[in-house]
Image 1 (cartoon, helix red, strand yellow):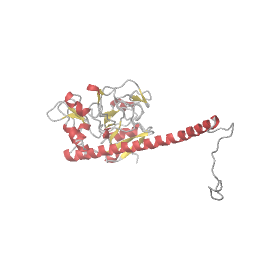
Image 2 (spheres, rainbow, N blue to C red):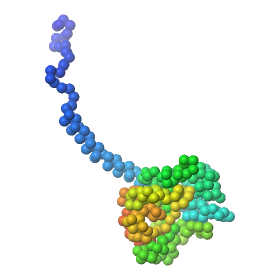
Image 3 (cartoon, helix red, strand yellow):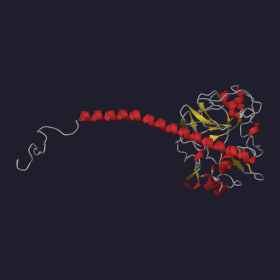
Length: 315
């Protein structure tokens, strides 16, 4: 043997387990490993979810900023903001404010494909109104809207999660929960056939104190207190109904004319899927985050553009 191997180098031999020995993990070791993996997963998942929600909240803010720039550009070009809802000159068909903003959101082709002389859900507008426009939606809203927002041909109307407030509802004013404004009109004014678009010079409360858009998320899926009610509204979307509302306030059960300003119900009220509060666009282009328990009097003062109420808004 020494003739074939250098001195000091032994030939290796295969090692076989001793009789009665074992290879691998015991059941106890395997259970311990699985328990450790479960603990690590439990620690990691909440962090991943928080990071995802933080990214979604930032993306939502970005969408609101884009809409704010589009609104300012519309006011610069036409001398006024788009009315919440109203027909073109010589027409009787109402057009909603998101449609007016399409050319200012790099959606010129989509805007040209929308016939403002025909209803939003007319077959001529079906291709446009079923197009999803990302800037109109909040990425934290992951509730399917397909059933509630069903369109002909198995399509789905494009969603909208942001809305202006046109005024403070008289029923809320009657409760005494909020002060009565000098002028009860929101940033974009009143909707309708005789709508008069507003101008930034008319925001005498100050652009930094006037709310122009807020989250009213998941429509037309009906939500109360963080849960779907199962009683959804009729189809809607950025091209159709529910793009504007007024401040009613609500109670915990979703009934209106109550002290809750946000996250009580999305039935034409401010409603966000972000934890602890929602994002809002102020008329000066700033994004304000309001806590879910914000007093309704503060929100009411922010809704009106010339109400004359003292107010303060979050930084």
